[in-house]
Image 1 (spheres, helix red, strand yellow):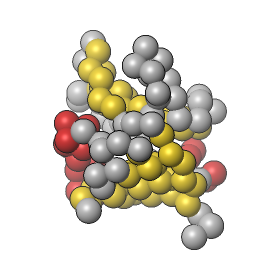
Image 2 (image 1 turned 45 degrees about the horizontal axis):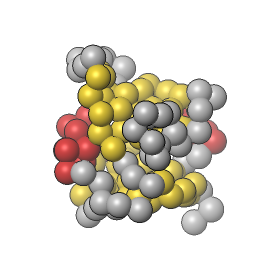
Image 3 (image 1 turned 180 degrees about the horizontal axis):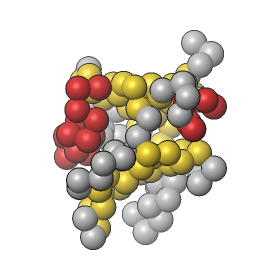
Image 4 (image 1 turned 60 degrees about the horizontal axis):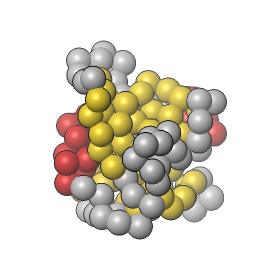
Amino acid sequence: MDDITAFTVGRVRYDEENGICLISGADDEEEPAGYFIIQIEKGDPDGPLIEVFGEDLTQSDGVAALEIGLRHLLFTFEPLSTIGAEMPMVRIESETEIPERARNRLSLAFGRRVSRV
């Protein structure tokens, strides 16, 4: 499909710092900024903050669906969202298995929009 933007990361990791959870494709734990970042703040009414390829494509939530696999994440974005207007679907392939803790945190953050495969 032409509407899927796909890329591979070394790993997807979970980091919790000052109540903010980051899920990143960065290769170095000292450098969490990478291809794809999700900040999940507890109780944030706007939902998770998602950043793809830098600050130009940043939005609060806007996720229509999320498929979570052992080594991939497939996001479908709302067409009128900042990211969705540019990239309707983003598939992230991980070279290593995505930690269960990260998969669980994503499931909690996106709720009924999540499917696990």
